[in-house]
Length: 485
View (tube, rainbow, N blue to C red):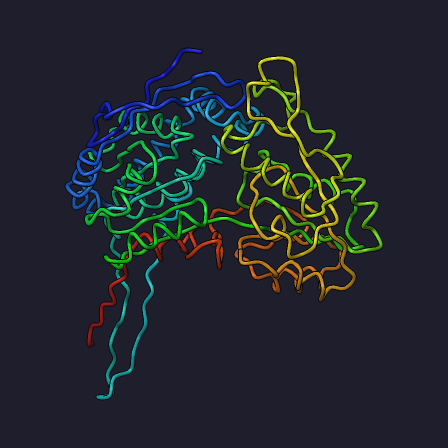
């Protein structure tokens, strides 16, 4: 594989950075790219370019502006194989996942928000006035301005476009920093933007890290009007402190310690398959993944045995092998973090049902960041491995007796992102899902998303909601206009 050079995209032009850093393929340890880190001056130039482009971009008729979004979606699909190779080279994820989820959703995000922007209506009220007449009140929405986008490494293209698409659709300009761990598809998207003729400065990509690098330069920049970020809760807290002096809006989708509740009346096979997917999908590196599984006591032992069997069926293979069902973690650094929790769980008294270590292959995969899918039982509810997000292919299974106990256990966390409820009792499904202190609750499914619905969490899982019309609350500023009739 040839080593690529990933450059910054500023004001419609690609630029070298002040230095480069290596991007390593986590499946085999090979060097796949040298990434150009942006300087503070280059971030300043990107923000200035976005500021210059803002008035004309915001003034474009909606149909003309969203035509560009359709062109971006078409460009992703036209270069599908390049995006797929870039995503797999950055993350090591299997071809089945990346080709069916990451790249298609990257294109779908642009189309979905283009359609939403074209069909938005306006909130209006007729108000009776003291003199017996009326007034018309309506909300006129204007773009927030120059939006700083900082996206994560677990679903690089999907979550990058999830933020860039609504920002552009609603008339904002963007300065975006992809994760330094997964910079390739964002750079490819910049190429697509240039090919689509997107006006200079509307969309800018700068590469780098967090502290004293592009991430900090964006979040502390006085000419950035708002920050949207997906990533670790601790980083979200740091960004809040950075934007506080300017009282700037933020939209955060942060970590999760998500629960699945399996009731004894659940479709057993469907629940096992669904929980296996929600625990091990993308090597557990999805903010919505399940790390805490609570199973009603009459089926507890049977469920543990069945989930163990599903975990041991997973094929840890090369990304391009169609038989592969689980790839590596995103980096060796992240694997060290996950391994530290595997050791901690044992120290805290966990019974290791399966997994718990690094697999050995006897080939180039041993240079990768693979880890065994792992299941624990026996931990106390106050154990660190129950309370802290691991973000790997791991879960703990514990029994419960009553519906009330299940709800209490699931909600006993500082996070509040997602939950899944498995039951064939329709009333219970509604009742328990509504009782979950989360932003998303699934019943008899997981990761089933309609892009028009609100997405986000509470507590340590974030601030605000994005998706469909809900994205308006962050990406636009309403002005109420009152006209006396």
